[in-house]
Image (cartoon, rainbow, N blue to C red; front, side, top):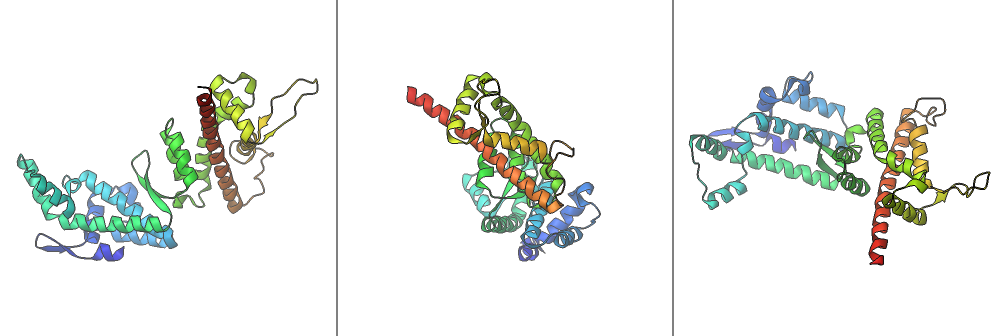
Length: 310
């Protein structure tokens, strides 16, 4: 990656490299809030290297460069029009020509900076190659920021399910696996509470299956067949009690007594250190994914039964 940043290419009659481009862009366009106490690109780059180890260092640097390029592109009227040599050839072959002075000015800058666009494209190829080899991927948050997260088939499936009703929760499912969240107990807790809010209506509804609307009743009945249930058959007076679906009931207990929703002496996590608590949150996260996937399975089985009746 450093080789690509420092490798020289021609812009007009001058030799430049991506490091100089980013250095100038950092000085002119990067927000002060994001710079923090680092005045130059090199200082910020070095600070990231010192803060992270191993592949996390690579991910953090990639996120920084992508964010910096995005800031430059949004504030420099020319950069957003830069194209690679491949794209330039396609434009030329299409026969397009500038129609006014503004387009002519932009086109002159575009032609001049083709080699820069090619070099940035080479950097992105290195990024995606590295992510693929380390089982990670780049995602876009609701605010437009891009972050690198671990690939997780179950998380991706759950995110797809949630995206139909709540894009914010859908992204949070993936964000939980962001490398910078390792050790960030508070952020993991925030994400879990958000997902708990999504599941709360289902958990509460399944506690009283006799009052469920038809759609949820069908899902509940299917889940009773494929998942373990628990609870007494009748109460002390002999009245029949609907059995609870164990994973939903257990997950509710994790939320309520696992250091997420309440702060009392009945919480299970009170004697855990930070490392144990984070592992506990990770376990709750995995259980949450399973329950959301179970709900989707219940819906699918319910639809299957409807099809069988036709």
